[in-house]
Length: 187
Image (cartoon, rainbow, N blue to C red; front, top):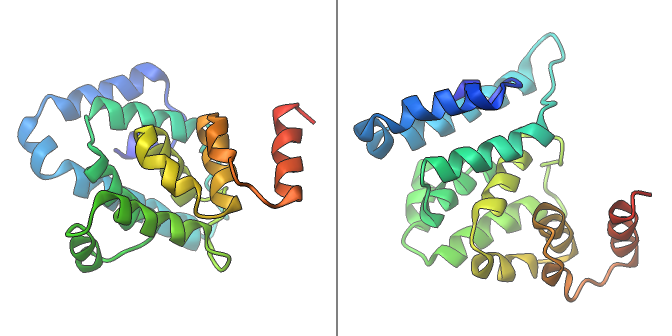
């Protein structure tokens, strides 16, 4: 898992890591998701507390790698929601377990609310944001539509990640619209 997340591996290296993981059904069923979240926690602590000033710099490569990994590992929307709650929103195991009793839409909404709240400390250059991006890109469109309508920040981010202009419907902030249009036009 660390080899997929912490450096800039080639596609063949990522494929080799995924092949090892998927070849062990018991690991895949019982341990993989917890190991994945533990590796991310370890990396986030490293980026926050290291003396060398290391910063997470692989966002553009991490999101596609994670999407490939999520698909190869066959993660369900429910598992993706767990990743979102634990890794992105920072929910404890207990909070996550309590949320799992709620519909998947409510679980995902809690993650999106955490990320796109005005007081959120998650920035788009954080590993958490890259994981959130991979979760969003891995979810089916019917689950994403209500999430995009959380607020303008969510609309813009989900549109940017998916390229689906339907998620921009209802956007109100003119600056956000200008920024999105400028990025789309390469300005």
